[in-house]
Amino acid sequence: MYRKLSAMLATALVLSAVLLAFSGHASAQEKINLRLATWDDENAAKVTQVVLDGFMEKYPNISVVNEPLGDDAHVKLLTQLTAGTAADVVMVDSGFLGKMKDFLLPLNDYINDPEVGINLDDYYPELLAVGAIDGVQYLLNKDYATTVTIINTGMLEAAGLELPQDGWTYDDFLEYAQLMTLDANGNNALSPDFDPNNIVQYGTRTMGTWARAFQTAIFTFGSHTISPDGTTAEGYINSPEAVAAFEWYRDLVHKYHVAPTLEVQNAFEGNLLADGFVAMYPWYGPWFYQSWSENPNLSFAAVPPPSREDGFRESTICWAGFGINKATPHPDEAWLLLRELATEPGQKAYGGGYALSALRPLMESSGMADHPFFGVFLAEAKHVGRHDDALNPNYVQCIEEPVIDLLELLLGEGGANVDPKPYLDKIAADSTECLAQE
Image (cartoon, rainbow, N blue to C red; front, side, top):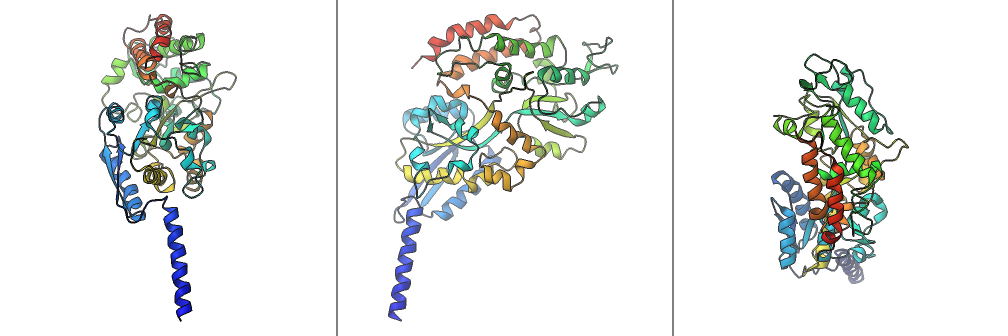
């Protein structure tokens, strides 16, 4: 009997040692308090709390508090990181990675740790790359959305059109928009009798001043907004290809009259697509799938965004990730939390439809990869290109903000005769000094 008890005790001790090792060096004797900074709203906070409750049950010596930052979350987070008061684990939009990376702990050693690491082969490589700079992984994906074209299929069918296929072009997009734009007499925008002053249905909308979405057009036209080394916009934001993209966008509103001006678009009360005011969103995410699906008067579909004539396209992405504050006093425990958020426990919660997960096995096993709507977004991941926003910490103020001002001008009531080239030249000329600011 004594031998049996001794053997059982030895086995228990070995198992305990294994469990302690798996817990990533977190001491079972020490109570650790972690803070998580997010930009969760009330509903998102409930989702996050489910993940945190599961984590704290798994690691009873670690307590986690979610601290939603509310409006201007990234301004607040950057201020906190600079002051040394930020949370242990922080949620970061990909566009702010360049500005925040010096405050974040490189994750490569944790990722490759044989005891507590993760297998990067389980993730879509294009999506992992968004959270890395120069081969250093600073963020692991919370969730994301590629941007594709959303179409009101009822309006599509009423115009006698088939659902566009992968490889359709920007010229095809314009023709679809013209055929689905109607005046009060039922004439479409290709009709000689079309009245552009009395439009009741638009074939498309613009994405307004959302500069990130418009990058998909700039990229596909053959340019980027900034150099690969992040030092200048000269020759990129003002390249002939980029200028042509801005002109195309302007002309949707003012030359072809297939998209409403910003003033008309912003004044509309209701949902532009669901209420039948516009037929297409050119670059959009899956965020309203649930509410649109519950609308008995709406049928819709997602299709790939338009390509160039030679079949090329490059897409932008909406991407949020979690990183570890370099100043945290508990980096090992913070990694365990980050791992929980970025692997199956967290990804099941975050990648279930409102947005998507970068965890490939989860998307495949859940059927999302083959879903007629969500599968389009997942397939678009292979077209995600260089992420301009993260190439320089001053990108937002030097490039994005002046582009937003230009889009507001081009797409507004007075944009018909605005030439984007001088404005883009000015952004480019100012960019080198602006981007070089400490």
